[in-house]
Image 1 (cartoon, rainbow, N blue to C red):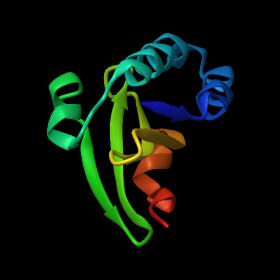
Image 2 (spheres, rainbow, N blue to C red; image 1 turned 90 degrees about the horizontal axis):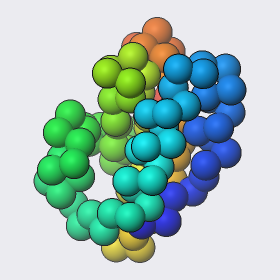
Image 3 (cartoon, rainbow, N blue to C red; image 1 turned 120 degrees about the horizontal axis):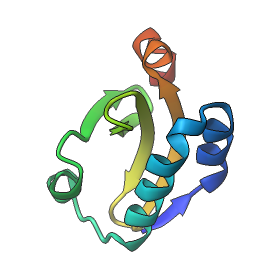
Image 4 (spheres, rainbow, N blue to C red; image 1 turned 180 degrees about the vertical axis):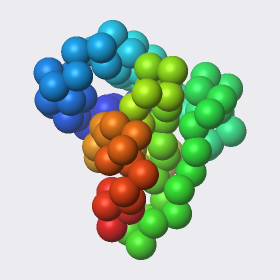
Length: 99
């Protein structure tokens, strides 16, 4: 898969250094994946969830033992993942990312 973009992840771990290793690990795994659907994603990340939003379906990953949430849009047909946001639980629970 192509992952767009590492910058989003880097900006988050610069503010939350404890997220760097888990985000780098997720990035490396995602780069080498060839997921075709959510069921295949869940073989690697069992707690990944599809969330329906006004702009489409987003996939949410738990990061660092569920301390953080990684919001992505996965285009299985293009083998591409767009990282939309990495959030603390507090920010995630606010729900602004759904717009």
